[in-house]
Image 1 (spheres, rainbow, N blue to C red):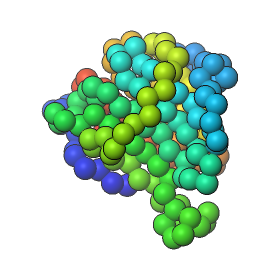
Image 2: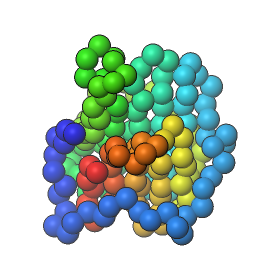
Image 3: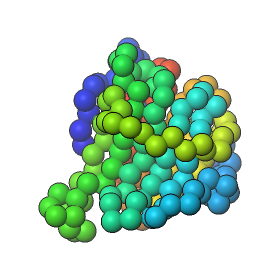
Length: 159
């Protein structure tokens, strides 16, 4: 996994939240019409996030906006399953990085993901709490592969 900047908070950033106290949302309310699959949501603290599997492109999830707990000028976090060799399905390596937006971003309006709720699509779960935390994680069916990010005022990090 790639990380352009380490977490900047003095305290250890939180890990992925325990979803026991969260409510799962209806996935259909967040689906967008496109080639491939696209699910879009906005967080209570103003982030814009997408879970997408574009037609013939790697699965990815990202959030952008005023990311908490990162250096100034960093306003985008992206996690993607990037095939290592010619898009071979047997050698996928995750890439997770913070950075400035890499070109024009498509700004689709998303439904609000309310505090203490989560969305799951394409083996990716994103959750928000009521204190400015947004977390997104890919988890393989067998649980062997996991990667993602946590965005929090106490520190943001790559999982």
